[in-house]
Structures are given as structure tokens and as C-alpha cells.
Length: 436
Image (cartoon, rainbow, N blue to C red; front, side, top):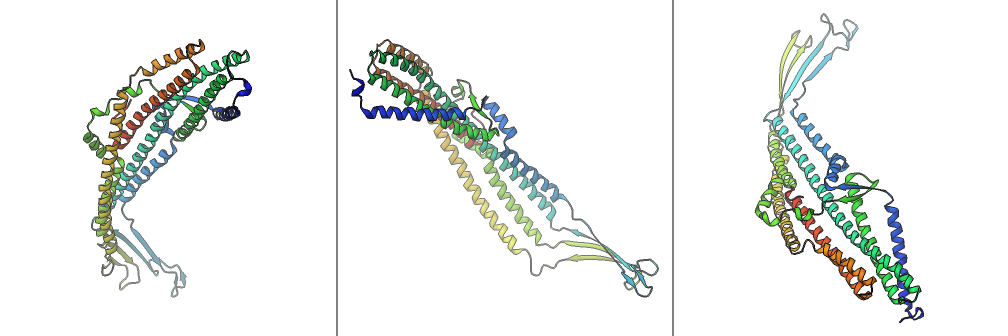
């Protein structure tokens, strides 16, 4: 038996430090969660994300802007009207004399006609630019949606792990209260009471650390859902992990082919190459001068009264034949062709890596008994009861609690790893092929 005075001083100090740390963190955590809590499913979160995410809504305007440029590219050049008239007639001593009998005025109208199909080429470039804006929008959607789903699953399984901590902490708090009474009666040693309390404080500190991780993830979810006024309690079916079919049922090549078809960043690179090819054709067309046609009427200032003229104008391409822009556009084609090849390799590499990770998590989870956690939780209750009946020692109890905690954490981590691997594979393919 140990007496109170025989306990090491450093043990008492360590317990006091742990208690103070836990109390501070718990109090700060409580103040953070003073906000409202809203239960939300992944499907509800995605709907709110699509309706309210400001970054996504702002990017959507780029699509509308690009489509408006198509309308602009289809418009023809406006005709040019010129008027000139007499300011002062010294013979008639009249100001602004533009009368038919004694005045003078000229009227001219001109229309520029684009040659070499410049207008049609500009329309095609505007259409490609609109397609690129759509590619950017859907790629942003893919990225933000992946962030939402990834954070949702990670936060959910962390909250699930915290529930396991809550069960242990609740049991230990009851035992700690019992041990306090027994200690005052001299029926248990201070050593056992302190060891039990130290285990309780340690679990509370770990749970608080986990709560802070959840808070960070929820802050990101709040930003994605544009709602900083609530904390989210994440709801998900219990069999969500098991309900997703095994990745092994799908071949790697089919996933790569699907990625080539659905990845918007790859489509963006291809449209960028198309844009440069169209720009090259346009720059060659710009080298062809445009034609200007017009008609003039001169009342009294020409070789005869009421003279009419037909005018034709064109730049002479002696010096500037748009050589620099044509050469730059040709280089642009070569550059974007390499970028498309690089993007294709990137897509293939990402799909291969994600597929391999998904296979690994599938194999690991298949080896775990689905009823393992339920059996372990029942065993936890039995161990706690047996400890209170003094059928097992405190050392055996703490060993089992540590084992229970580690197994629950590992199981939740494995489930989270599988969902993260699935979402990464969906992200790499560019389409939700595996979903609950």
C-alpha cells in the first residue's frame, strides 16, 4: 500500500498539468461550438454547395462573358458616313451656306468588307474561347466538389472516433467518481486513483485535439457552403463504405479511357491547342488587306455640279504582312501540342495512382470482420463491469482501453482511407463512377 506522502511529486505535477490543459481546451472548444448545429447529409451539402458557393457562381459569369463575345464576333462592321459643308460663302456673304442654289456640301458613305474569311475565323475563335471558359468552370466544379466530399468524409469519421472517446470517457468518469469515494475510505490506493484519473484526462486531451481537427475541416466546409453561422453534424448511412462496389470490378484501362473523355482540364488543353490553330489561320488572313467600298456626292466642289463618285480603298501590303503575329501563332501551336501531351500523361498517371490506392484500401477492409467493432464495444462494457467487481486489475483495464481506442481509431481511419481513395479516383477520372 502506498501512502499519500509516498507518491512521487512529479506524478502529481504531471496530473495537474494535464488537468489544466484539458480544462482550457475543453472550455475553448465549448465556446467555439456555441454556434447552432445543423444536421446535414452529403447530398444536402452538395446541393447547398451548387446553389451558394460564390467562387463557383463567379466563375460561371466567365462562361456568360465568353458566350457574349460570340455575339460580338458575328457582328458586321458599321458603315461610315461623312458630311462636309460650307462654313462661310464670301460671294453671298452667308454663313453655313449649304443651299442647293449657291451652297456647297459633300456626302460620302463607306463600308469596310473583311476579306479572307476573317469574320468567320473570329467567330470560331470566340466559340472555342467559350468552350474553354466552360472547361474551366467544370474543372473548378470538379475540384471544389472533391474538396467538399473529401472534407465531409474525413470530418465524419473523426466525429465517429470522438464518439468512441465519449463512451470511454463516460465510463471512466463514473469509475473516477467511485474511486474518489473509495479512496477517502482507504479502500483503494492513491496510486490507482491517480492512474485512473490520468487515463481519463489523457483521453479528454486526445478527444479535444481531435475536435480541433474537426473544427478545421468544418471551417472549410462552411466556406464551401457559404455559411459561417452553423456547425455541421454530418449524417451518413452506417453501411456507406460497404455499399460502394469494389474497384477491382473495373479495369484500369476503362478508367483511363473515361478520364480522357471526362477530364475538363484535358479538354481545356485540347481547346487551347484548337484556339492556337484557329488563331494561326486568322493571323494569316489578317495579312490579306480589307477592302473599303464607298460612294461620294459633291454638290458644287468638283469638276461638275452634283458630281457622284465610287470609291475603292485597300492597304498595300508592302511592309506589314503580319509576319510576326503569324510566326508567333505557329509557335503557339507547337507549344500547346506539347502541353496536351503532358496533360494526357498527367491524367493517366493520376488515374493509375488513385486506382492502386483504391485497390489497396479495398483489400484491407475486406479482411476485417464487419461485426468487429460491435463485439469490441460489448467487450468494453463487460471489462468495465468486471473491473468494478474487482475481477480484473487496473492495469488490465487500462491496457484494454488503450487497445479499444487504437482499434476503433484504426478502423475509422481505414474506412476514411477507402472513401478518400474512392473520391480521389472519381476526381482523377473526372466523373463520379463510384458512389454511395
